[in-house]
Length: 336
Ligand SMILES: NC(=O)c1ccc[n+]([C@@H]2O[C@H](COP(=O)([O-])OP(=O)(O)OC[C@H]3O[C@@H](n4cnc5c(N)ncnc54)[C@H](OP(=O)(O)O)[C@@H]3O)[C@@H](O)[C@H]2O)c1
Image 1 (cartoon, rainbow, N blue to C red):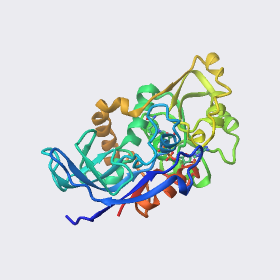
Image 2: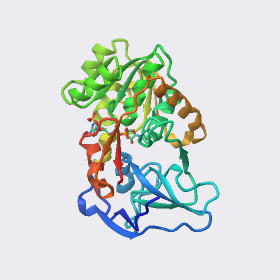
Image 3: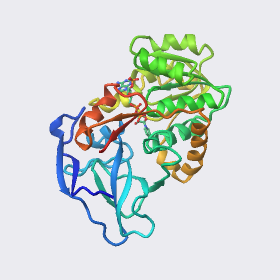
């Protein structure tokens, strides 16, 4: 296997309070690490770019410590073992792990999963077969307690998690309404992914559109966005509704989180609003991955990866794409 001699990395140089600017990042170059006993080195080929990264760097994550100034930016990534002194990981094997925004990472195998490139292309392990898929799957089925009679609304519906969540709800027999930004994304989720209806939050009044598309009320709201969209859906809940708090991307770049103004609607609807973190389900990932892989194989589920080229240096721009709504499906950074 051909080896580069240098390892490019993106490090956090300063802590942004809102969206990061170029001076918040530093590109560093180091020799490619050499594995010690019980270690191996991975050549990263695909990096997961996630909205939560903004919370990790601005220090407002509710479930993890902030990335330290000067540290390599944290990221999940897929790649191939290039050197190994580890009995369980051989050169050439494909793996996923928290390798960070760098071309090569040294690992002792903790938290690393082996990938089968014959089962699915590597980027799909960052999409429907990765944390993206796990979030959609457990959020809907476990937290949302989905049943086929439910009317399900998904926000961020043309994004990574949202597009998978909506498709799972369709597979389970639900009526599914997606909320997304712009006509192109709305067409994609209805025409290609089979959602029953789409609401373009950039040009439509969400609460009014829900009156039309969900006349009996919303049973499950899978929320990736928060803010005004959450407030609008709160006014359209069916009795016993479950709000699944996956994330709040509309708040990640804000200086202060905006709370849900309409939360008292939960009382009359006897509804619940529950946050969750996908890795809490890690011991059930294999079960979910097998089911998701089956749906992919049968053509009932589409995993769309939006591949951003440019390598490690392009990471700062790639991250901003998420907040400008410039991705459709899972945003992945290709590392040449
Ligand atoms: N709980 C968990 O364990 C877990 C795990 C992974 C991800 N998540 C959460 O899942 C959510 C989606 O993540 P993802 O990776 O799938 O990202 P994504 O949805 O693929 O990308 C973000 C999307 O958010 C939308 N957006 C950005 N700013 C917005 C705003 N101000 N208002 C409304 N929409 C906005 C954009 O779509 P439009 O063009 O439609 O605006 C953009 O494409 C995030 O909140 C993330 O934190 C949770």
